Structure formats: structure tokens, C-alpha cells
Image (cartoon, rainbow, N blue to C red; front, top):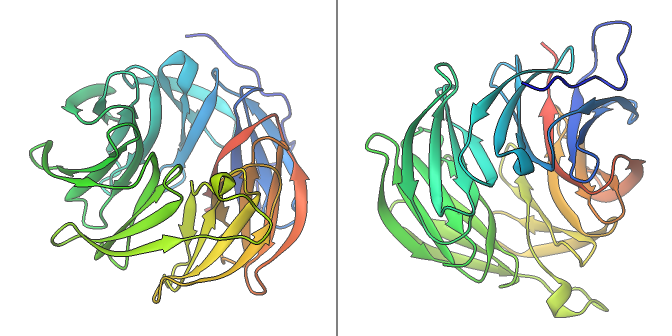
Length: 318
């Protein structure tokens, strides 16, 4: 396997919690100190990195290198790539199962979801889904995985015991992000071109609500919901609206949009710090990260990172 060098290494072990941000065009990850809001390390990874997820114990971090068709496993302390996992062709988003052992990966070109055992480093299943799969989510009990397909405009409900689809749900145009909320009772799906977030009752896979967005002075076609993040108490959702350059604040109980926060250019994905006082939003066109003060729902500062930041994930030091 090709070796990669760490561009910047700290002389002492990492002490503060970090936000890891993937930079598509630089083939790097920027590690941001969640307290000082400074980029402390820049780590070289494979080509065109997008999604980033930490193991449940933060011992390793998974980064998909889209152009390499590889899921890379990285030592977060040393910033070294330990090995690659098989991932299928053109991996998009992925999710780590609650068992900490299985990754579910959306393979855009092949219209499949690949299941990888991270311990044996083998593919254990491949599940046919819709055209251009993108979003991934797993229920809190681990029994259901969702894959969304951008072109088919569906959410596919996968039984993780049998690794088969048991339901397909139509969603609005070009679904992107997806997540289970309220202890798995609801499924939220963002639709980039449909300009909505749809909320489903997971028990019967039926629509509960549809969240729409309208920003004064912004053309409707620029309002493109992509990534979203909910607070731990699941009362408030923050939704990135892409080229609208705003994050929407949504009451997760009433589904009402309460306000909009101005960000950098084309806001994409987000991650909270550990105590949820700050929310970090990646802006790929302006190549920076907007830091939002959660309490007052205002943008606090901007942090320059690499070119075209995409994914974001919290690393808690333990």
C-alpha cells in the first residue's frame, strides 16, 4: 500500500477534542481544535476524500477516498493510514453499525450497498438498491439500515439480519442525507433538488411531515438541503442549504423553520463539538468552516481549511 506522510505533527499527544474535516481537492483532512478553533494538523489521505466517521471508541477514523475506491482506516493520534478496506466502486456516504464491526457503504456507480466487516477486512454482503445511492443511516437498535438513491428518489429499508430490502419509500428529488431521530421513531431525509426535508414514521414507513425552506432574497432553486444535524435532546435541527449559503434552524418537534444562519459558500455537512455549544459547518466553495454558536444560533467565526471541505466529524479524546 502506498504510504502517506503527515504534513504537520504535534510534538505532544492530542489533548483537545477535534473536528476532522475532509478536503476534496487537497486529498487531506484538517483537524480543528474544538476549543481554540485552530487547525492543528493536516493529514494526507487518498484521492478525493469525502465521508469521515470515527469508531465508537475513537481508536480509528474511517475516511473514504472516493477516487481510490477505498475506505481508509487511520490512526487519529499519529495521523497514519493503517490499511484500506474494500469498499466497492465509487463509495459515497457510509455508516458504522452500532456493533462497531460493520460498515455499510453506498456505491454510486454500481447501485449497491456494500457491507464490510472491519475486523476481517472482507465484504460480507452487497445489496442492490436504486440508481446512484448516496445517503446512509442506521437505526439505534441496529436492525435497519437506510440507503437513499439520488436518481431513483427512494429510501431503501434494509434488514441488517438478512441484508435484504424490506421496504422502499419515495422521497423528493435527489435525496442526500438521512438519519434516524427520536430513538428511531422518525427518519429524516433531505432532498437537494426537491428543496425539502421529509420526516417519516419508521414503524410504517409513511410520511409524517415535510419541511420547506424560504429565504428572503435567495432564489428558490439555490435552496438545496443536504447535510443536517440534530441536538442530542433532538429538539432542534440544523439543516445545511448548499448554495443558499445558509443553515436553517428547525424546531424538531413542530417541524417549523425558526431562523436562518448565514454561512460560507455552499454549506454541506456539519458536526457538533462534544458539549454541543458549537456547530462546525463545511463550506466547500469558500474552502472554510463556519463555527455556529448553538446557544444564540449565530455564526461565530470562520476557519480556513483545505480546498473544498466536505465531511465533518467529532473526535472526542479519551
